[in-house]
Length: 83
Image: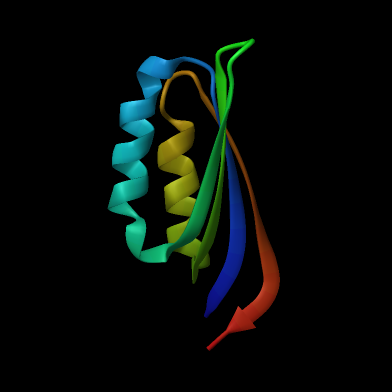
């Protein structure tokens, strides 16, 4: 069953941005929307991604993002199941 979730991504080194974009593009089919905010004073980018998909695919996306150097990821998935 599909669920709705949010993935929070913190990129602490701009050189990781291209790798993050590549992973997000790979999972574009489950991404409903995203918002990125640069925190220029500390050179950090915060990205929130809203996803809709099966738990396994959401977890796979989070896992791939988390394996990128200089990237921290946290995700939350609702318990509501969608048809």
